[in-house]
Length: 510
Image (tube, rainbow, N blue to C red):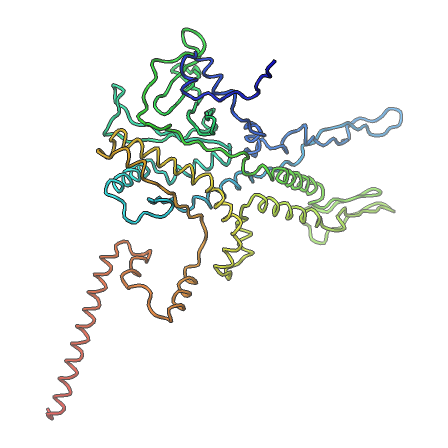
């Protein structure tokens, strides 16, 4: 008997959407998604400092102490004690947020630029139609404020490990594309309640995408939606329709693209997962240290015997009186907790180095001082800078797809620019240019340039005026400088004329 095949051929998105009911479509598109090792619920607890493990009373239990009561044992006459639970110090740090924000800052601290390329090299002389297409794509990016969208996108990916951008075209009341409208992009993220389900063919190419989300109606009731996209249509399903269960709402709708209008991003770990153990250890240490300070941070005394009198608060030359043979000692550490502070320093170093992040806190920058050269600063930040370069492996590929999706909509519909053939978009290659953030010492750089030219000028006065951040209108400033120089020459000429007249008079004996 023939053995059953363990891995059946992956059906294309068109095959799934043809001849299957709504429930089957949803099952086929959601069942084969690769799961993450850590659930999103766990990551959200790690992200929110108020939900960190240090606040879990099952993990960090309250301290049990014996306190005296006002009662005495009738037999022995000794004071009766009772057990009491005392709250412990609990300190949580938002290190996960710091790591994510630092990674976003280094990767997108400078705006991403785009250029036209051909076989990987910049295209020096693109055709007029390619220029029109490029300008239209850049206009779409400008209208959608992609400089800020990219940061929100990266923050969602580094936190949730997946996100997507959905591009869509404006429509009028008749459901037709509004040629006067603007192409828009929507961020799909688990943070917004989206469940994302990409579908791949046998060659691991994404040929479909599904999104499950919840919409609240006017009565505040939650209605689940399930939207499926392929290269031509969007299929919209609703759970709880009058017929019961999942139902397709109307006929499939054309979305205006001939490509899948989705750009999907996925990484396998949140940016802090490898150092989560160190973060939890840091919080345990500083919480325990806080408990210790509560007991020993202020003077405490051990008295043997009976105290007859206490000094007043703030009294100079305080004296304590006691009975004969009374002895009083101050409880204190013989040595400070150097081992705790040393471990904390090591753990913080592990956290930033193993996550390829930069410790650029205020205290750290004070230690660096202001005499560090630009070259030394770049070496100090080489690890997070290289990590940002590594991140472009994902973002570079997906940003290229983003350009292709937008260009496809422009040539397919004529929105923004009419009359561009579809072949132009296929022959036009877009390449994103990333410039990860790196501080620069401009004075040091200019001195190096001037030294290399033997002290000769390397820029014009006009360019120097333009680069001056105090000049809001370089043209006007240049005109004012020219007028001032002209006036100074006229005054100098007048002074020379007066002096010449006086010398002539002396020569004539006047």
